[in-house]
Length: 445
Image (cartoon, rainbow, N blue to C red; front, side, top):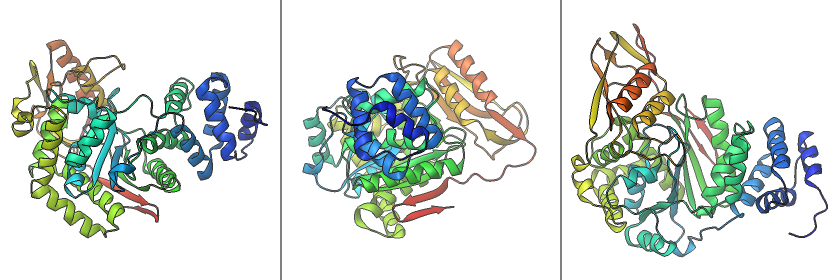
């Protein structure tokens, strides 16, 4: 790495005092931490100083670029300049990749997405796709490029070589109470997005009880920071701020969510899932082609209603080795051995759903992971019959829970029911879209 005139000690001291670090200093810090010459205890001190003192936009962008450059970077330029990647900050029932990305491909964009597995209650796109028998997510780079050229869309597992500095720093933040920092969260997400190479980055920043960001102010700040990073890095970037105060759609669990995505691409599906996917696709078209929102939405809607988006999903599944009969007939997915109804304990209105607790219930059923090594049961999960604001009668089914055995079903049932709050009065309606952030500014709804 060569000589550097400033010690890590000095950088920690300056950041502790609220001073701004230079791009060269941040690059030195990231390179040193990645190669082991800067120890964990010094990086822990720096992470805490950043949590307490913050970073400027320039510092955060420099940190992101340095982490993106810490490992392999994918060059998608050979595919053309219309490559797009959609990223969600995580939630419960979020299967938008399976709907919005085929829509974008049907509109002529090139979807070259690297995705991850789920951990805890946040579902992973790779796990959902692997519930389709035969579907391959471990593509070589050549296979990945060939699939995008052939179909306009491919989803592959995220390479361990992407942004290794972020992986190392995140593990450290996780055990040093330094996770909740906007600059550190934004740089963590965006370093992987930049390293993955897409020219257009469409973000879905979740807000609410099932999201890391619990309130709109925090979510808006994270969205602004990530759009700023993308713009500084020369990527076309925008972000929707969306509500995760209840699960998205009705299905929570891998095969259940694939089936719901297919239903949506056939023109059905839950209204909230359909609407969000139209927004995400139109947002990408607004970035790619400079279209006004109404025209972009019309193109996205045409891709959905014509069946072109469904065909793109089918093409992707076939090219990546999956059994397309599960797309043609989602009822082919093997049913869970045990199905239990969750009945309303009282009459009234379903006033609130603790979405994180609903996600935790799905983990107990077998649909999610408690550790990275935990197995996933693709058939496990929850199919909601009621959502926030619905009137219910005592004993009426609120959801059907799916599990491999009665013990898991009972544990999931108890956790699910504990997540629900009832009232005699109807709650205020929950808006789905809370805001839109672009490089030109922010619009909160």
